[in-house]
Structures are given as structure tokens and as C-alpha cells.
Image 1 (tube, rainbow, N blue to C red):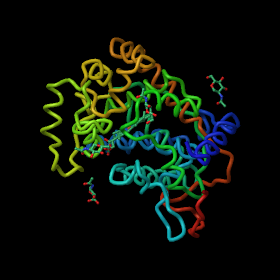
Image 2 (cartoon, rainbow, N blue to C red; image 1 turned 60 degrees about the vertical axis):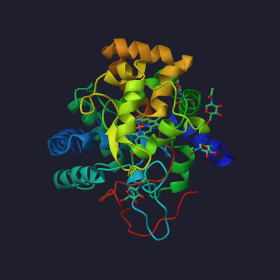
Image 3 (tube, protein in one colour; image 1 turned 90 degrees about the vertical axis):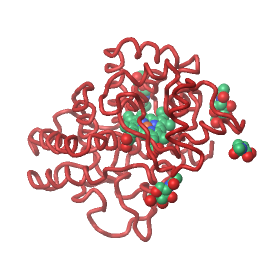
Image 4 (cartoon, rainbow, N blue to C red; image 1 turned 45 degrees about the vertical axis):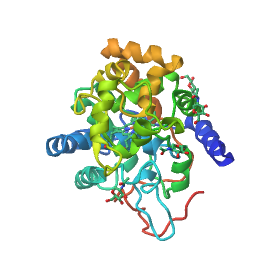
Amino acid sequence: MSPLFSLFLLHIIVSAAGAQLQPHYYSKSCPKAEAVVRQVMKKALIREPRSLASVMRFQFHDCFVNGCDASLLLDDTPTMLGEKLALANINSLRSYEVVDEVKEALEKVCPGIVSCADIIIMASKDAVALTGGPDWKVKLGRLDSLSASQEASDNVMPSPRANASFLIDLFGKFNLSVKDLVALSGSHSIGQARCFSIMFRLYNQSGTGRPDPVIDPKFRGKLNKLCPLNVDQNVTGDLDATPVVFDNQYFKDLVAGRGFLNSDQTLFTFPETRAFVQLFSRDQHEFFKAFVEGMIKMGDLQVEQQGEVRRNCRVVNSGLPVTPRT
Ligand code: HEM
Ligand SMILES: *[C@@H]1O[C@H](CO)[C@@H](O)[C@H](O)[C@H]1NC(C)=O
Ligand SMILES: *[C@@H]1O[C@H](CO)[C@@H](O)[C@H](O)[C@H]1NC(C)=O
Ligand SMILES: *[C@@H]1O[C@H](CO)[C@@H](O)[C@H](O)[C@H]1NC(C)=O
Ligand SMILES: *[C@@H]1O[C@H](CO)[C@@H](O)[C@H](O)[C@H]1NC(C)=O
């Protein structure tokens, strides 16, 4: 692990406790905020069901990089390499326009009040609730960052090749438990991933020149058809057998050796995480409960820094080029 990486994580953990977030933050300044977000998300669901998964993923990719501050949403400027083109995000994160739509709707009702960082948190919750998952009260009151850092994202966001012990360590640095890790991975109950993310697993796992031996053979046959060696690696496949329904099918798939990503299947392979996979595969209620806890904890990740409520989630209000943080 690079020194930069550990320094950054230390900072995030130390300041996490200082956040002053609360459920009724906008009850006076913008009482309709949550209803407006939900309305736009409902429209997005009808237009393209997958976009809810894509939006939900923003919470992970925003909160793990300098806290939940919508740094993820800033477009690159001539003087700043933003996070959108970071390794884990390029050609992969999508549906930024749904957040834009939420922001526009909110600016009409209460201009300059609701932060983009809070929009990500509310929209992620709605994505889960609208696809059949749990609904919960989110804490609000985050500010939007004045800059973004591609390097910070590259230093933190895990690869789909990661194994469970690496992921346990990574999540632990954010004060997220093994149970949180397994439950939050259950977000892969909705959405899709590219062949790009599994080619190594299908044809050259850990440099062995062979496929990952733990994939169920019939499922592997299916993946080989979806992603042959010469495939356009942007072709996508479903992350679980019910990709538009938020349920515990993901965990049933892992138990059966039908996890899509290596980082998914490894949660069943490793003894440290297997018991939680088994528990969630049997008991959807336990999964939902643990998932909500994990999302709230992840939403609490903050760093002390200056912020603002952006008018447009893609640019800072001053419009001036911002300097990268690292
Ligand atoms: C545990 C470590 C994790 C790893 C290694 C990981 C990795 C990935 C990868 C590689 C993809 C597909 C990217 C592509 O091929 O374009 C993906 C998709 C997705 N991830 Fe994760 N992820 C992790 C945890 C999470 C968490 C914590 C959340 C949210 C709480 C999340 C939400 C999603 C969603 C919803 C999708 C589907 C997005 C879509 O269909 O557009 N992931 N993840
Ligand atoms: C897990 O991944 C890490 C980092 O890539 C690696 O160093 C370690 O050897 C792996 N552990 C096992 C048991 O495969
Ligand atoms: C880490 O988690 C524990 C247990 O949930 C909690 O008591 C503690 O305050 C957390 N620490 C930080 C810095 O968030
Ligand atoms: C498999 O990966 C190893 C190590 O990354 C590499 O040396 C080897 O050439 C690869 N084999 C194939 C068939 O791609
Ligand atoms: C996926 O598509 C993008 C944009 O069209 C392209 O730049 C990229 O090279 C493609 N990626 C892969 C892995 O084929």
C-alpha cells in the first residue's frame, strides 16, 4: 500500500466522527426535497431500469474517495483531473444525467439549498427502495467539495479481481466491518458489469492460464458465450440472476458458484466472509437489515474541508478551475 493511500485513509477516519448529519436537515429549507428526488428516480426506473443500479453505485464511488462530497460528479477541467476518468470509473460509471435531472428539479423548488452530495445519498436509497429493497431514513446536511482527485480514486477503489481478505482490510480502513462488506456487496443484486471486468477470471485467473476453478461449470459456459476471447469488452452481463430486483438472489448465486465478478465469488470462497453469504442467502430480512446499516455507515464518511452547495453538480459555483487535492 502506498504511503499516500494510508495517509488519506487516516484522515478520513479521524474526521468521520465530526460530521453533523441529521435526518430532518431540509425539513424547513426544502421540505419536498426527498419527494422530489423519489419522483425523478421513479421516472428513471420507467425509462431505464438499470439506471437505478448505476446511480446507486455513485454512493460507493463518491464516499470512499475523500468522503461523501460529490467530488465524483465534477467534470475534468484544464487544471484538474476529476474522478470520472479514474480506473474504476472510466467507461463504467454511467447515468450521471439522472443526477443532473434530480438537481434541476430541486433547483426549481428550492434553489441553492440541496447539495449534490446529499442527492447521491437520497437517490441511492430510492434506487434500492424502488427495485424491491428496503427503505430507510437517510441523514443529510453534506456539502459539495471544491475539487476532485483522480489519484485519490485510483488509490482507493478496489478492482474486480480483489479477493475477500484484501476487501476486508480495505473496508476495515473505513471502519466498515466484515458484515458490512458482505452486505454492501449485495448491492450487486442489481445492475450489470462488462466483460472487461471478468476476462482474466474466465481465461487466466491469477496468471495460471486457466479459468477460476470455483465458477460453476454451466455458468462458466454461459459466461464464455457472453465474453469470448475476442469480444468487445464493453459487452455487459447481469451481476445476478434477477438484475432489476433488489433481493438476496445475489447471495444464492454466490453459494451456487454463479457470482459474476471475482470480488463477488471470493466472498463465498473465503472462510472469513462465507458465513455472512450463507446467512444472507437464507434470510433476506437479515440482508436488508445489514445492508441499511452499511449504507448509513458509508454515508457517514466525511472529511473536514471547505464546501458549498453546487448549483450544477458537474462544476464548482465559482466556475474557476480548481486545483487537484493531491
Ligand atoms: C466490494 C468491493 C466492490 C467491487 C470490487 C466492485 C466492483 C464493481 C465492478 C467491477 C462493477 C462493474 C463495472 C464494469 O464492468 O463496468 C460493479 C458494478 C456495480 N457496483 Fe460494485 N463493487 C464493489 C462494491 C460495491 C458497493 C459497496 C456498491 C454500492 C453500495 C456497489 C454497487 C454497484 C452497482 C449497483 C453496480 C452495477 C452498476 C450498473 O449496472 O451500472 N458495488 N462493481
Ligand atoms: C489476496 O489478494 C492480495 C492482494 O492482491 C494478495 O497479496 C494475497 O496473497 C491474496 N490472498 C490470498 C489468500 O489469495
Ligand atoms: C467505528 O465503528 C465503531 C463501531 O460501530 C464506532 O463505535 C466508532 O465510533 C467508529 N469510529 C469512527 C471513527 O467512525
Ligand atoms: C496470464 O497471465 C500471466 C501473468 O499475468 C501472463 O504472464 C501470461 O502471459 C497470461 N497468459 C495468457 C494466456 O494470457
Ligand atoms: C469501451 O468503449 C469505450 C468508448 O466507446 C472505448 O473507448 C473503450 O476502449 C472500450 N473499452 C473496451 C475495454 O473495449
